[in-house]
Length: 242
Image 1 (tube, rainbow, N blue to C red):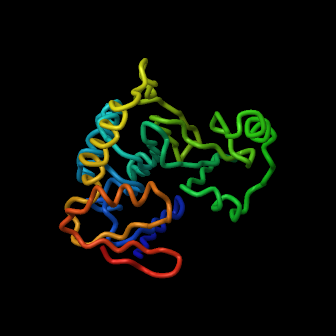
Image 2: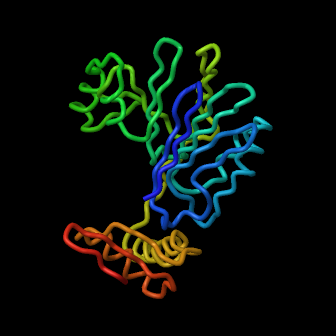
């Protein structure tokens, strides 16, 4: 496990990750103008901070829709003192944020906010959503002032003024008009496992991957028998080398 911490007068930024995670590219980036962190993974692509900074500097935020995968991007512009949060197109990788008294706290884990020295109130709207739909349908969380980033959105926060804006950079994915059935569905699922899943594991010598007893995990691994990389799959009791 690797941990990176950046302490600035504006606050503390940190990330932790497995050094042999499948993601190709650095999880963190810093130069004289930017401080950036990345969480999640990209499909069939190498994380290139230059591409991300070109989008931010040119303000052509719609270009973020070309990134395939699940991710959370945090970017601090040291010159303008503006913080950018970018969610993936499905908001599959969560970004939680809390804006109070002109300050912002951000994390990919809700547990972070339970430890912060902020006022904590149970969000009744979240309770009604959860009871009625069995899951929240909005940006609400169980803490009143903590929100979850919507899919395909970018939040820009001015650390000088405390003002912020939330901007959609792409439309949401929509369900297809006709769902596949029978042999067509099986054939398509097989192509996904054969063609898409191996792309997560390309370019790494060793990979750490959690292994459960579920049929889903065994199925995924069965379609990756020809991987050239060694894979460590830790379980509750022991690690298995494949």
